[in-house]
Amino acid sequence: MDPELGEEVPVDGIHKALRQLWAQDESRTNACLINLAVYSEEKGSLQKNSAIVRDLTREHACRALLIEMDRDAKDASIRAWITAHCHLSGGKKSVCCEQISFALTGVSRGRLRNTVFAHLTSDLPLILWWQGELSPIFEERLYAVIDRFVFDSSDWSKPDVAFAIIDQALSSGRVLLVQDLAWTRTYHYRLAVASLFDDPLAQRALPYIESVQIEHHPKHRNSALQLLAWIAVQAGWRTGLELHLAVAKKHGNREGFSFERKTGEAVAATLISDESFAPLARLCVCGGGMEIVIDRAPQSSHIQMRLSVGDHVTESLAPAGGDDCGMLIGDQLARGGKNSLFLKILPMFRTLLEG
Image (cartoon, rainbow, N blue to C red):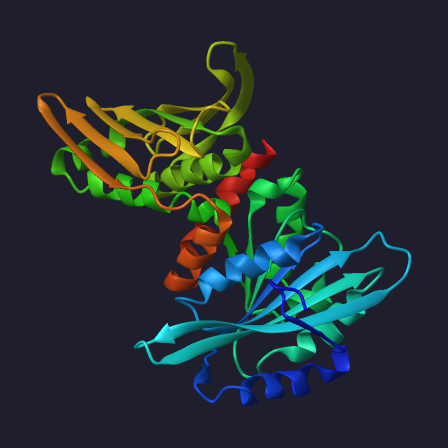
């Protein structure tokens, strides 16, 4: 018995073991609204992800399938464990969510779909949360059974290649909802920008923006690029012909991007990264006599918002949101949606990424 994963059972005895699990205590109620599969090729991920799922099930009822794959092992094998995460409801009855954990070794593409996904709760949507690099396991036979694909492109060493593979999946003809947790990290910044531009003076200056600067942690360059892509798409800018790279010794790595407004004037955008910064640390938008600054200190749970247009100055605070993937996946499950805005900015983001 693993204290985190529960009871080890034979793969062909999983359904029988689950029935016995519920028969042991009539005060427990099985709750399930979705299938949540978590895939990782990191050793020891089952225990880590079980702790994450335990917290998620406080708010999101699901059947969780945890999958740890060792593709480099010579021999093919599969082990399985079952448990339930239970939380009190009204102080009397436990509301529980099932968890089935699988450890696979060797070349196991067929078993991933045919064996592991054979244990989904039927007629409920399947959300696959992919952790780490996008490997050859992600192919048509896999994404053909997925309803929502969640990943964190911050984990990818070659995001341009990985997004090309995802583009293939989106073009397959099947409706597949995709969600990048790097995009989820920009949510509260996007809310802050939108709220500041509710000010009539800021709206008046919008067509005259001249510069954008984003400071970010080096690991979270994709979040910074997606935030920049969102601003450019919403403002109707076109990318300039040249993208340039430079190094600023004092402020870390600096990247420059050029855009054109609809009227033809140039907009300069700069990304600055530093290990001491928060994932998204600072956004500054200037032009037309206006300056918008959204700032977050490392480890802070809030962002500071400031709008100045001449003598008109407003300042306020807003939540910064979570940083770790467990909190972000919870936010994503709570919001749901078709992620149409992410798909809208995706072409611009990939242009900036590949440039």
